[in-house]
Length: 498
Image 1: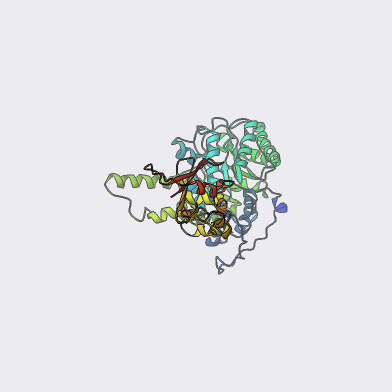
Image 2: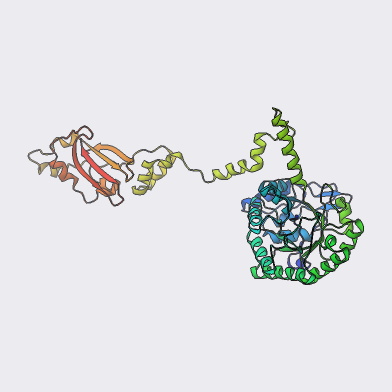
């Protein structure tokens, strides 16, 4: 599976206009107009990366970061189209998982490709010869798009089947969050670009694949960028590759890509056809068939996007090999090759996680079962607020002593004379057997107790107190049992006179 590439529709300038002015050589990387404020956490990360990346200028080649202002708050496909409408040539490293995509974004790149070659290598440990499936590529792609804020162009291979499979692939990539998709005209099973054994489908089927992809986009109401790739340069001839590219352009594709061009002359001839349609160059590192040119040279020829499909997976392989040699020899990789633990944590997102986690932090007191009980039953808003700020304290209303002058006069025998020196114990046990409440209050403070413990509502505790005369001490509970029942929530409520 080859890496993917990206480009905009020729008519997209009318839909998404963007005025871009070239910064002067002396301008500061922060001299651009201020970036808009957005609420999205991912967009804020994108804005941060944009501010830290200098619009690259060398010998007239521009890598504009102005488009970051618009891309931050836009859907991925629209952000990608704005990039393609901007002047200059744009470099796109190919990632293979969420971490490598995050590193691309952190380095200041405005978009990236996914590489089928690299994903097959990293996910399966297998060569890119058609063994990896649509579902595996889609799953990996979804992880990648969710990890970054920059637009991602997905490698769609040959659509994983016929034209109906192509439609399903395009719709799946749209749902996965890709900004663009690259589709090729190889047969199944396909072969990696720049390797032997490539074969392509007929002209008619190749064009119908592109039409099916365009229909899938329209049916989805999406604006995903569709890039048509042909492998016919190596499979048939350069002339055949040019014919297919023109046919793809006539069908309405957004960008063109001929893989494995063999010379600078072929690269120039490719860019001369349908000059208004963006072209993708594939700088396959380490010895591919296409000449490796500088970004300046590629822009002068007419390319808009430049893919680097193997750099990240290649250096990862070599770095892991070197680290394993060091470990086998009883050493660890030197500091120049191994980031510190703090650096690793920052790269993978621990610091961002901690900052966001603070937004949802709660007091440790809020986890106590006693506080949970009173949060559900107490009618006192003030008591609830206080308990959120300090460890739980029973929220018991101070009640006026029950005995009044009239009550005293109606009790000539002094039946309640000893009650006021005694204590009421209120104990509540949850359905799970855990103790929720165990408090003691003076027995004379009775009025309004049901407002504290709703389950006591309707109980004549005064009458119970009048009848209480015998203490009970069974070794577990001491005093007279006045009440013992389960409330509507299933909690056991017990009231003792001690």
